Amino acid sequence: MSEKPFDQPRLAINRVYTRRGDQGETSLAGGQRVPKDGPRIAAYGAVDELNAFLGVARAAIEEAPSDGPRLAPLAAVLLRVQHELFNLGSILATIPEDVHPKQARVTEAEVVRLETEMDALNRDLPPLRSFVLPGGSRVNAALHVCRTVCRRAERDVVALARVEALPPEAVRYLNRLGDALFVWSRWASHAAGVPETLWQPNLSTSGLEVHNES
Image (cartoon, rainbow, N blue to C red):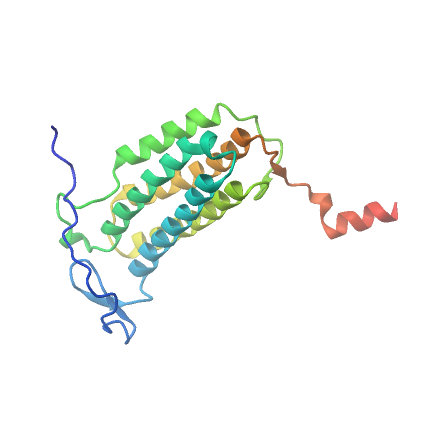
C-alpha cells in the first residue's frame, strides 16, 4: 500500500469556546496570535465559507426527489472538493516557516483534476449564446452561490499573496474551481433537463417600459 501524502489530523476538540478570541484575536496553526480581521484570516475564512456553501449544494443534490441519482456523480465531486478546500485552509492558516512537509494542502494534481473534469462535462453542454442567470433549480442556484463565494475567496487569497508568501497552487486552485462551479451549474441543469435562464437585457424595467410604449 502506498504511503499517504499528508499526515492525518492530530487534534482533540473537547471544548467549543475558549474565550481567547474575545479581544479580536485568533491563533494560526503555529500558535501565533493575529487579528481576526487580518488578510490571512480573511483568506481562510472565505475558503471555509465556500466549503459550507458546497455542503448546501451537495445536500440540495442528495435531497432532490427525482434528479438526485442523475446528479450523484457531481455530489461525489463536491464532497472531494470540500476535503480539498479544508486542505487549502490548512496551508492558509499556517505561516510559511511553520509548514510541515506532510501538511495537508492543494497541489498541481488537484488543479489538473478540476480541469479534466471540467472539460469532460463541458463537452456535453450546448454552446452559450448569452450570459446565464442563477436559478432554474435549487441545485443550479446553489452552485452559482458557490461560484461567487469562490471568486471572493480567490480575491482574498490574491490579496494575501501580495503581502505574504503562499504556494502558487492556492490561487490556481481557486481560479479553476470558480470556472468548474460555473460548468457544474450548467451541467446540473442539463442533466436534470431544466432550461437555463439566459440574460435578456430588455427584460429590465427600462426595456419593458419601451416595449409597452411602442
